Length: 579
Image (cartoon, rainbow, N blue to C red; front, top):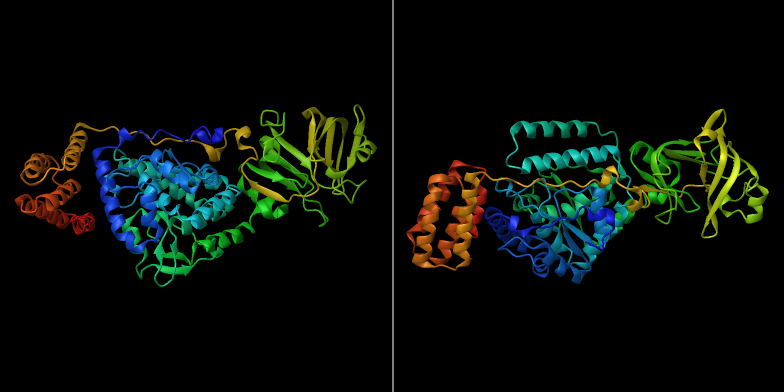
């Protein structure tokens, strides 16, 4: 963890392996048995190899530190996190070659699918595919580009609503009223989305590739998306004729998705190299590469902290609220206004004395060329040219821009980086445009960013570590569960079956010990199927002549008839009971 940037360290949690209950271990074992049996045929050929190379085993939930040690051979690491972490943090971690692994385990009620990230999805879904160098390269490139995406306030509200609903649904102690309230909140936020941001478009690309991607022949594709690799139900559904298969192109960013429903269509890439090609097509459309007024308008609409970079290299971070455009088309932006805490940086490093504490209430600056030197960007003026403008201690400067913006004041300093002037400070300054006052002398020192154009606009502050906490980097924790006396007894039942398996008991000894557990289960937990399935598997493989075998089979078949929801899970378990 010590090697991570400080602003990312807050997401790392202790896995605390002892917290995993016997039921969770049994759930993991059931899921991995089904997944490996099905995906060894239907997933990309690197999947089964990846399970072995990353240390993912059927018998027990993996220790994330062990997975990380295995991944280091492929240029990656893994860290434990708690549930959802903000998309911006997730992407920055991946751009550093770090796989965030949600350390929580899904509940028995959500065995086949959970909307919340968990260790099945992350460890058994994402980690194995990282052994393929072309996919690993795509994922890191994707994260680098996604870090630059503009995320809107609406996106952040949506993320928070999804996280809250997922946590509530996954918590068995949640009441129907709590779930209903959270669902209503998500619906309200969803209906309030006014536009699709860059971050949302990148989210769609991630969804249709790394999460729900198919690969190979469009008529007979294989699975590589982690969302499919961590859910047997969805893995089977996605390859059926009920799901439309579409060749992957950059147009996938136009296709939305519903995380609560099976996907009616999926995208198929012919190979992993195509992922990078499509990603670069998307990147060419983004504000960090296009710049200009269109990109500035994106961040104004976003109402979140973003960065505008001028052609001098100076980077201004904050909430952009206004871009004044001159009437003539030769220049796109005459003046920029930022509201609230703002930051000035150069090459992603905050300028000394120009952090959010100093620029607490916002920032404003003209953009463009000076009337006196209309053919050159002010950042490239020579010392003698600056002297001719009055850039000397105690002298008054009167700067007229070709846009019509005028700035007057007493010279207070000029900052250079890489032989370019990037910042000019004036005391007793006044900035105006037509009849409007943009900066008043009573407001203090006027620090003016120097640049004549905007080549890049990107999401988040330029120097995240120095900027401080932003809405897209808030850390939350999934609350620890508390178990009732009945739930503790239920857990102890599973612990006894696991102990019987690990002792390698057979025949009569196995029969005798299982009978003791099942007597209690028959009295107290008549509708539980997974422990009976685990017991059936043990008896079928270690005591085949036992009468207990037939009793367990009969009990499981009866439970299937009583509950259609669990019937497929029981049937799948019975299919793979014979080792």
